[in-house]
Amino acid sequence: MTERIIIAGAGIVGMSTAIWLRRFGEAEVVVIDRLPPGEGTSHGNAGVVAACSVAPVTAPGLIAKAPRMLMNPDFPLFLRWGYLPRLLPWLRKYLSHANDADTRRIALGLEKIVGDGVAQHKALTAGTDAADWLTESDYSFAYADRAAFEADAYTWALRREAGFVPEIAEGPAVQEREPSLSTGIGLLATMTDHAFVRDPGAYTKALADVFEGMGGTILRAEITDVELADGKVTAVLTNGGRQPCDRAILATGVWSGPLMAKLGLSIPIETERGYHIIFEDASGGPSHPVMVASGKFVATPMDAGLRCAGVVEFGGLKAGPSRPALDLLRRKARAAFPNLRYGGEVEWLGHRPAPSDSLPLIGEVRDSGIFTAFGHHHIGLTGGPKTGRIVAGLVAGKPVNTDLRAFDPMRFA
Image (cartoon, rainbow, N blue to C red; front, side):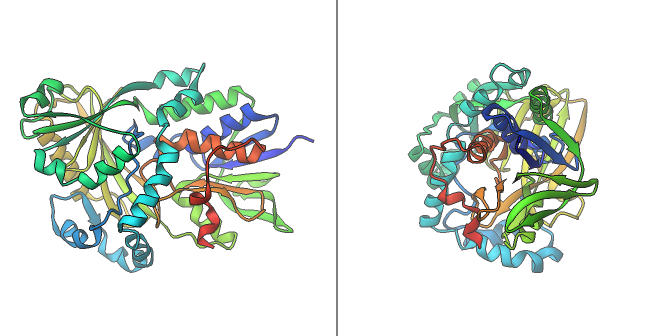
C-alpha cells in the first residue's frame, strides 16, 4: 500500500522536503498550510543564499551589550516591553548560550545546514523553472571603517574557520566596487560564491508548481492537532477535517511550537520579528546583496525593487508592525544608499522562528513517525533545501551523511 506523508508548512523548508520526498520514492505526499505556498516568512526574507551565515546572534559579550542596544534608538533591536514577562523564560535560555564554547558549537552545527547552501539550491531546482529565480552573486558586508570591521573580528573568525574568507576593499575602492554606497562606508568585506533569489515568495511558489507537477498535493487548511495510536502518528487534524497519514513532518516555523506541545514537548522557541521595506522600481541601489553593518539589514536587488530587510524585535505573534522599527530601517537604507530613487514603498513584518539555542530542530520525535524541520532563525532560505533533503532522506530511509545530533528535537525533552 502506498505510504501517505503529510508535510505541515508550505514555506521553503516544506516545499524542499516535498520535492525531495517525491524524488526519493513513490509515497503520496500532501503539503498542508493555512496560507498559499511562500506567503509567510519564506516571502519576506532578505533573499540571500548566505552560505557564510554560521555565526549565531548569541556571541560572547551579548549580555553586557544588550541593555545599551535596547536603549539606543539608532540600534536595530526593539522590544515590546509589555511582552517582556512572557519572553523572559526563553530569553534566559537564549542568553545562556552567549559564551565562546556554545557559540562555536552552534556555528559548527549551522555550517552543516548552510555551508553548501548554493549547491543545495541548485540541486533542488535543477532542470525546473524554479532555477530561473536564483542568481549567483557576491555578498558584501559594509562597514564605516576598519575599526567597525575589526569590532566584528570574532564573527569573522568563525566564518574563516568555516572556509569563508572575505575580499577587503577600503577607502575609495569601496565606491569603485559598489558605486551605490555612501562615502560614509569606508570598508567592504565581500564574500564570493554566494547567491540571491530575486523574489523569495515567487521562488517558493515555483517550487510548489514543481511539486504539483511531480504528482504532489497542496491543501489549504489550518492544522490543529495530530492523532496518535500507540505512540505512532495516524492522522493530522485540520479545520477542514481529518487527514490520515503514515508519517508527518512539521515545517511550520514558530507555529510548530504548539503542535510539539501536543506531543508532550515544550520547545523554547520565540518569534524574532523581522521587517522589510521594498523600494519599488528602484535605481541607485546595490548590484548585489549588501549587509549594512551599522543597521544590521541586508539590501538586495529584486524584481520588484530594492528590498531592505532586517531589524530584530521581540513582541510576540499578535502585535502589529512597529513604526519606529520601520522608520529606522528606512533611515539606515537612505544613509547607506544616498542616490536611491524609487516609485513607492511596500512594508512587511514577519516572524523568524528562534529556538533558544539557535539551532533548527531536524529529526524524529521519539519513534512517532513525526519529524521536525523548523527553527531556522535567520537561515531559513539558505538552509531550507538542505534541511528538506535531510528530512526527506530520514523519512524515505535514505542514508543521511550528516551528524544530526545537534538538531535532535528530543534535546528539549
